[in-house]
Image (cartoon, rainbow over all chains, first blue to last red; front, side, top):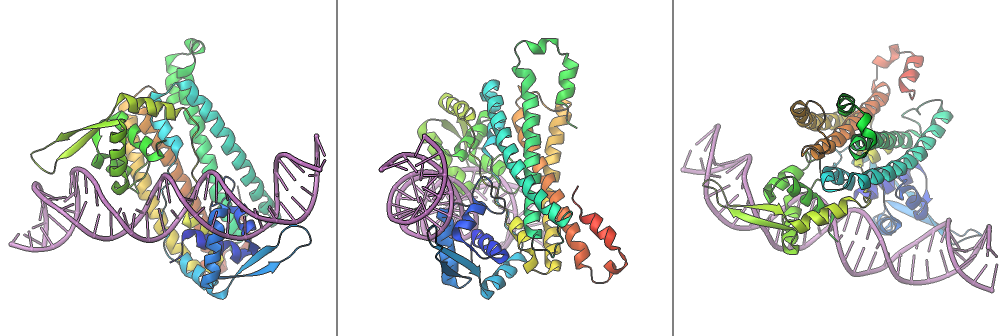
Length: 204
Length: 204
DNA sequence: TCCAACTATGTCAAGCTCGACATAGCCTGC
DNA sequence: GCAGGCTATGTCGAGCTTGACATAGTTGGA
């Protein structure tokens, strides 16, 4: 049985032959949106896939720069991948430290929490922007969403998932900021009525 | 340096003294919404926290059932927790097999993919329902969202995050289903106009 | 009566992931 | 000239996580 990472590598190689370095760039956190991994994990996995016969490679010696190993998926690799695609996925927990910090917020000063949230919002806005740009590039090329039979459909579907996820994350961060702001202000909140405060906190 | 799991345990113990079993029930996948972990990871971590002095416990021997160890956070534990809450969180990648499968979808029959999505939707609808019920219970108790100073605020914030995440996941699953359905139908699609098909696929 | 499921705690091997270390040539700016 | 950054590949130890195995009393149904 191959690891999930192996299948992610096979999926990338099925879309286009490429080097381990190319793969690691696409999977590199925090911008990777298919499967995040570091090169330290990718190269050994790639070597294993070659050994098992699911992938082969060709050495390329460009004039400039170090030699590259361009990997391609084999017929066996394609068969293995399509078998795997049809079986139910294993859900992985999305354990997020920020959620734990929000849970334990009462133990901290509200000020540091707001600082922390601002940084998080900035980080996720950056990632969201990059993802949206990529999705927009595909949409302008295909005049909307690509057809499921298109080579670009897979990337587009993965992008939509990542974009939705980031937007939702930002919505939550901003909701949390809004909750904390009235409590933090030392002077300004005096002018605000309790009714207004309560309305701002009310769930939709 | 403690692990993220340790802080999640401390956060739970800060809200209420409880046994390792209680903690493992709250963290048990797939319903855990603060931090997911199995008991096999929780008990050793709890023992370590006791050894480090961040947690202590009391043996309780109920008439019925096996003896329980009710753990409580110490003053040192609270200090450690509030120090940690103020530092920036480490982002963990949300690697989802289903996204990889969607990426590699062209390699599979559309039929099995739709089957698979239906199962996923059912699973996530179930989790979403359970989370919404919990959130609703808190909202009815507090007539809306709890105040940030409330003991229930942390749980409510974590719940909102999990609920948003599930809803977003379901939106994506249904979008993907919609994309695949027209392509899968062998006879029914003949009556549908290409314009309609294209409009259904268009990005918002 | 026996089997299954739940409470309650614990251990452990195997596998996955991260971050650091290592090498080496090329290019750009100071 | 040289420091820093990029391309490009690889190794490795430490730590995190999973899933199975282990124990043992209680409750409820077939």
